[in-house]
Length: 243
Image (cartoon, rainbow, N blue to C red; front, top):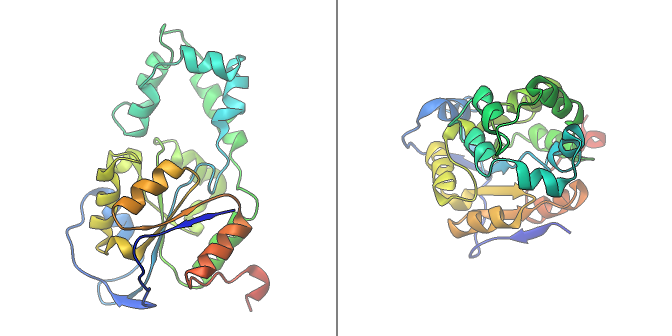
């Protein structure tokens, strides 16, 4: 099941005037594209993790196969912080290639990227949920730990049909479950945490969201997610309902 977790009781007002708070960097600009200052805003704002919530993560199966080693060996030989640094935008892909393995061995970087692109696909049923939310004019943002390669996902799957890549870790320089990343999101959106619903497959990230006052939904599958969204009064207009 999808785990529905939220702080003290509250209700969502369907429309709320956008409050004014400082917005910084490209992510803030992306978030602002949904609405002009003069428009009203439908609440809650929906925040989605991407990997294993919207898109299948290649790491657990395809990447070990690419390197022709079991997962245990991959975890033992890869650099302990290189990928995290890449996700935070601290290093570029060329620097990643140099330090991906502890022993500095070289590998086919372009081949790795091609392997990942082949593996990217929507989680079953989630595209219909996103479409249904979009049809009901909900504001949807990606809030995800991922490097600049999120653009490879976008190129293949076109997630921007449904959401904005507003809060990707490589853009905001912060990763979940750091409290700073959640505070960055609410500050840029200009809403109270209680007016955000956050969906993620990892309970650690959900708990961090709850701690700052967001509503948390742990993702298990698309159908259960739809049910839990409905329990919050969030309408999901499914394709057969669209006239």
